[in-house]
Image 1: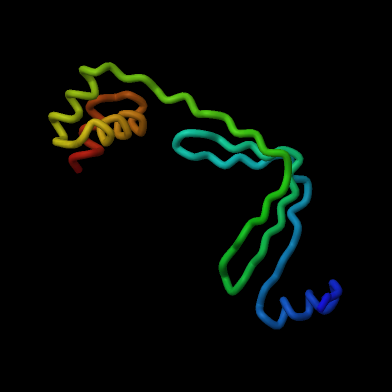
Image 2: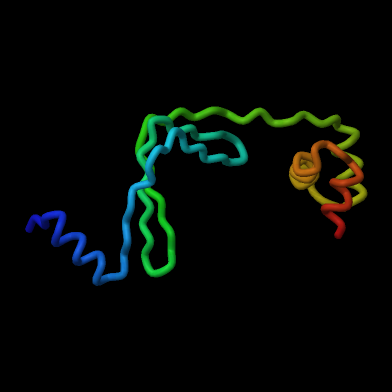
Length: 110
């Protein structure tokens, strides 16, 4: 059974679903802890369903690895010992504190 656009729109309206295209989108960037996903020439639609906003994105995808900041082993060890955490948590705290050891320790202990 194939539905035409008009019937589809009416059915979506009855279900409380509103869909609109976002105009003039140049690029969408999704940032994760290890990489950035760049979507160029993007077509973006926003679906509003009963208060929840959902975005549908289509376009050319390019994945870029994020460069992780390097910290000295002494700084990592100091944060680990002072905050009593694992090495991974110490590195994350240093990243979030822009490499400032005291800030990283405070972040983990308060």
